[in-house]
Image (tube, rainbow, N blue to C red; front, top):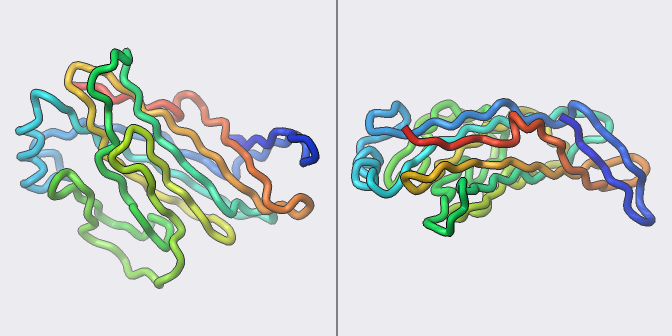
Length: 207
């Protein structure tokens, strides 16, 4: 996946950077009563809402690689869109994980979905307290983001969300990523990622 810098008046010219940021193939799973991620209470919610809503677990992996000109900030956004958009009930990003973390998400061992179909972590390795590296924004809306901040982002981040979609309406989740690199000549320079279509769009389908 390439990061692309566009020329702006008075700023640096066009440039492509390959391989410094990547998004793995994402996965969407329709949640059902009895799904291995669910506790007893959220299974009851699925049964209660089965005539109105479907709930999908979407798992995304984002990797940052170190270099002499590191990525120091990034925003990964997810936009839910119904197909077709007929003005009916909109899809919603019901829950996000992590909401905040001070370490790469590889430290997280087991993620479960509990009361009200919200995430909780059943097991976690010990983390050294520090500034937040990842902050989630937009839970409860149709578009949400994870913001990454560090002196030099590095490592694998595992991100998850629960999307609620209306029964009878197909939906897609579109990914976008913007990043800021600390460059020797120009300082902090913004880029946008060219995400391959097979990775950028996740289809959320019914049974």
